[in-house]
Figure 1 (tube, helix red, strand yellow):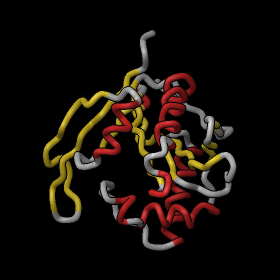
Figure 2 (cartoon, rainbow, N blue to C red):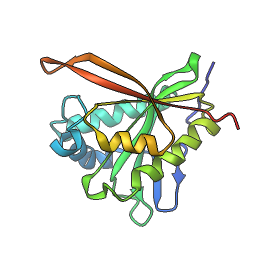
Figure 3 (cartoon, rainbow, N blue to C red):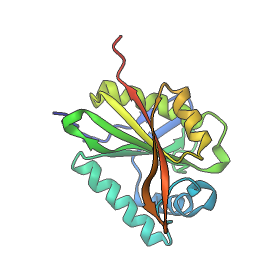
Figure 4 (cartoon, rainbow, N blue to C red):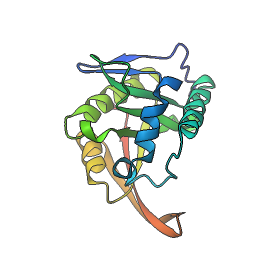
Length: 185
């Protein structure tokens, strides 16, 4: 069975990015990301309403990291590591199947600049090489063409389209499932 250990927290660098542990100081940026109509357009979750809600969200992430049930990194530019521009991580770890779901979001100012692809490619390596995952799943809204393009450009395969998969805000919604397996090379 998968036995991840996120202590000490694995800070990760790419050419342009520092992926670091989020802290309570990031609550303002989390509030913006999780309350923005633009950012949350395809994320069917209740929007964050206050700085306190953002702090509660950050505490849940910290608790999950501390018990090795999931991990999320804050995305920052190397030249400004104090300014959170997004996040990416693995949650819903299915330890007995060596599988996790990836989730991510990015401030609209940084869309279409290759930031999320750069972060995703590095975290795919981390998942397979460090966490010892066998597969990564992504669950997206069918309308989110940018997320589908990101996943396909980083080696994910569309595996399923679930019609009326879940109920949210008074109606049923469809889901597309993407997956990437650990390379056999």
